[in-house]
Image 1 (spheres, rainbow, N blue to C red):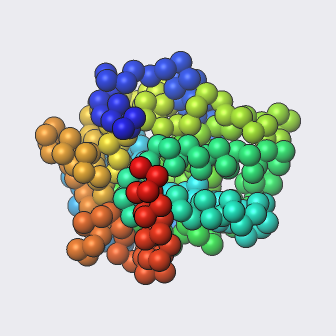
Image 2 (cartoon, rainbow, N blue to C red):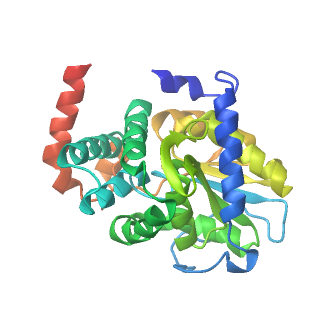
Length: 316
């Protein structure tokens, strides 16, 4: 029930660790952002259906930008779980850790929402796995993992929205609890400006196994967007933000143009109450009912998902 505390910015104010995480993410994003003349680089497809849906953005507004949540907004599933699969393939950890990653991913795809306990467990696992490895090594591997597990899971509709901002001359950042290195790779491959993500501490280019602040989740995302906007001279009232999760209401509430994308039930209700724009790119009755992408290979996970749900119910 802890996630309910993020329904509005005022009900759960940012902690000092949230502010630290947000500021660290903003600093990392500015360092890794693509130059303006490269913001429409690789993997672009301006003919994707939905590119003309949104009446926004305003062309030529240099003080406007767009901020996109990643998991289940831009990409089906959670980036950190896909990253874990790639690390397992490269023997970074044993089968028991893979089983845990698989269970967490099955739950995420069944429920269509983030479970803070599962996401925290996944991040703790990832930190322990990468401890002692060089940042450059994980960045190189991350490029391969993107091609193997992530490239085919990008929502075309959301990508078209991001492209509309780029075509209008605006900057576009991902904002995610995933590691900033992983988020930066995804942003680069999609031709976006950069990414705000969870910052893992490193010394002399080697991961220590600790975070800077806390995971970029809930209020910390809002702090990151606020810090980046101040540093870049953006007017948040002219900016847009996109997310699927009620956990991101603090971030969505910061901007003048909030969008609910593939929203969970709580965000859908909140968005309708405030007359926010909604977009849902999931198709099929089952997808609409439980938030599973129709073409996401659900059949292959059915047995494991049923077992995971049964285990979850017993634990409750």
